[in-house]
Length: 311
Image (cartoon, rainbow, N blue to C red):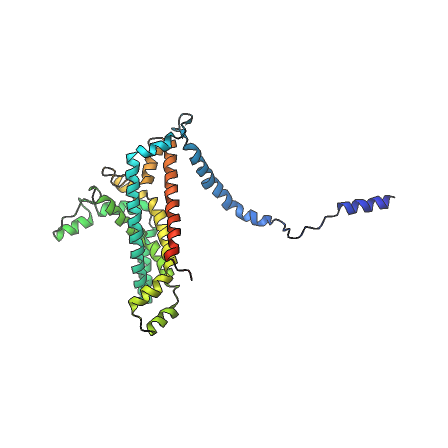
């Protein structure tokens, strides 16, 4: 009797076979993913949700938050400074995309084709080096170089009899000057991307086109450029996203002036949230930045179907 009971209990406690298609969870994989997942939750997901919630409140960081419904969103349509900041940011971003893509392409073609290996390495390092410098150092450097009283550019232009403009204090020149500073600082990153894309173009196709009588211009326009379209598309995406969030040079060099000529939308967000302590409205501006970047990126992806060549 005892043996029969023991046998029955043993059969009942035996592990049932797993159903077909069942796969045991790989807890080691989740353990490896947990640091990145934790960082995403703490620094991206939670702040994003908090931004959406705070957009419906009025809060100055000192007193309890007060719900205001859609009042913060309605303020968007009567805020002239925000419209001016968005216009400046769009101009800056568009100019950055055009100058970076064209400039980086020309540099990449020159380095890839017209230089020996030693000179090529030197040019790559020289072009990429400014990107390694912090924005604070770059801003202070160019603020000194373009100073109207004792800057190097002002001095040498005076020697050749050219009247230099007030680079950062003239409303007509301030934003253009910041675009030039940004180009000097960040062109190296786009250049490296373009050079890497250029080196992935199969040389066999280019040689075949030359053998068939195509000129260098035709080879570039009909072979090299289409095959580099995914790289160009990637460069336009990251350049626009980075340029639309520009903050450091405006804050350090011009403080948004003169007369808000160089204020960017992120700088206006900073002023609203951390100088005026209007956290609710600043959250709405942050959502506007997010929506604009997402919309432009989606538009770029939609347009890419018409010109990006997938091998």
